[in-house]
Amino acid sequence: MQQGISAIVLTKNEEKTLKKCLDSIKWCDEVIVIDDFSTDNTVKIAKEFNTKIFQHALNKNFSQQRNFALTQANNNWVFFVDADEEVTLSLQYEITNQINNQFQAFDGYYIKRVDEMWHRKLNYGEVGNVFILRLAKKDAGIWHGKVHEVWKIKGKTKKLANILLHYPHPTISSFLSEVNYYSNLRSDELIDKKKKISAWQIITYPIGKFVFNYILKLGFLDGIPGLIIAIMMSFHSYLVRSKTWLRYENK
Image (cartoon, rainbow, N blue to C red):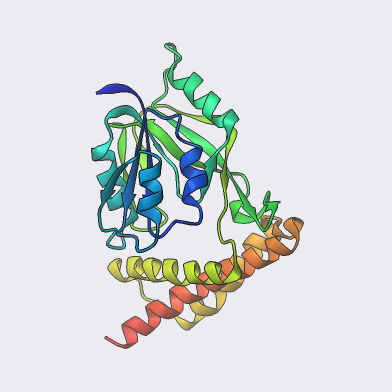
């Protein structure tokens, strides 16, 4: 296996954000795009950046898609970047310095992701101060969870100092669309685990989610964007439990 970095990007109709993403990782030794049969210009854009492209069905399982991607990587290190993310220059330099350091003894790295919505960086709420494991040795572990998936690896890990920029939900309509989509996936998980839903949960979970995001996690300090996110995350919680309850009722 080659020493170097394979960057992996999962895509599904990402023509609006993909160029910025791919431009920020062209320094990697290999860039792989795993495409869930996009119907827009995603694949065309990926080809412009000389990436390796594999079309592979997501099948509502993000871990399965990411684990498939791991099998396609040819380098010792794998770096997962989402299509709506951008690797900062300072993060690029930090990553290359870390993995080229012959004295480094780490198997994976957590990276701080900073959300920017409507021209404002978000520092609070559940998206504030978030570190995610995105860079690790290829054989260190696998991804778990159909949605909100987690890369579980063996070995020592470290937090990097520089940030990964995230540009989610450019419009309210796209935000609503994603909330609807991900609530379906989360409902699938609850059904698979045979989790029953009560009226009390449908009422209290969304309220608790709003209080957690907007008050306990200081989302109000992010202004109007912080309020919108708190409401949307509360709505997501409501949809997950309402959909799950209805699916049990309609069986």
